[in-house]
Image 1 (cartoon, rainbow, N blue to C red):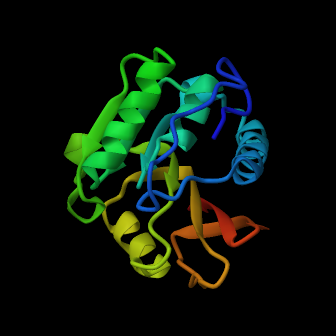
Image 2 (image 1 turned 90 degrees about the vertical axis):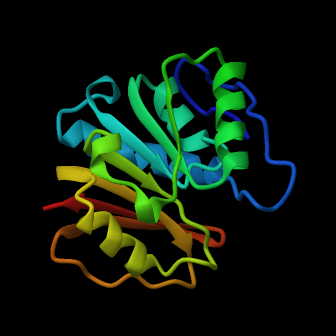
Image 3 (image 1 turned 30 degrees about the vertical axis):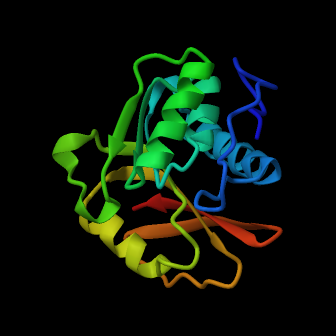
Length: 185
């Protein structure tokens, strides 16, 4: 795993030592951040202006990529202590200070712990979570601002139902993963 752009471009992240954490591939990150950067450009926003949540953060690679590109206010959330520790080690390795690490179950998280986000990375375990259920919970918790961007990673085998609160901007497939880019309306 490496950082693909920005301040930490080319830096190698610490990888998980087992299959409990499934990091987003470098190719997947390229697709995510090329598309996200294009959407932010169209919204006349920069990374330094937005609040970001990296939910089911795993190794923290998506949030750290956003930090590398200028992101300042990022919350990493995972119910796995191993994932939070791995994210912390990756931030320490790159000397990233002032990060918000929350070892909480997504299903129990409430908005009083975090700021409402402009961008959310949502990468739940493929097999143990139904994508539509996760999205419904996210919307019920009101974690995403109006016009906020949600990047949802899931297996290409999964289908996501339509939600009146979300507009699908793009869907991209890379290998066995699908990346959905939604805007909250």
